[in-house]
Image (cartoon, rainbow, N blue to C red; front, top):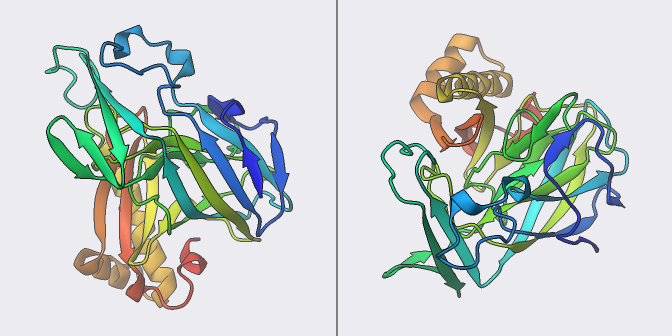
Length: 299
């Protein structure tokens, strides 16, 4: 199994990335990831205002997948996420959804052990998830803190071990990179931070040739989530809803109006994150509405 170490990182997804490893479809790859703050916070006296922001949101990779070409979909099966023993949560003035209310730069260091995140006097069930996962875009440069059609910082808490992520391939080899693992995070990530933690992620990569998803997606045991990241949450919610209706229309070979009504009855449109430059929304389609392999209805 190929292992990509945490010193091989990028800080932007761009069309001209250079790979650090090459694998074939069906291969397993382990990504050793730094926390989203680049390991700069180790004590509660370390605060956001003192960080070197050029070292924030490192993504380990990228990995070239042999045979991947524009017009394909990259399939990433998340096999395991092994967490470090401590994570951190940070916030401060101007940070997150309520940054105009926050007055103090504040850091909490949290012990993580045996599936529990210890926050102050609370024991929170750990829910390890991948915040940043993406591929090289068709053109332009996207900092790893920004999500769009290539994936990136989608901060979607359904991206956990046991789920499958689908990413549209825009460059030869796809060029997969990931990081920003959270030990636990609520939808919205409203203070600008989850429990940021270093981790080892093991995935299996594959391809759907000749069929490109219009946006990233993730499949859980219960639903197919279509993930849309745009400058405003209103834009993202509308596009996620549209993509969900179109997916149902393809799956059922129905009229747009029939799929539109079905979505209103049984599809949830939710928020993944509200604090990055592009906001991320998700449309959750129950798998029982998608006959056959759900990925065949992505686009």
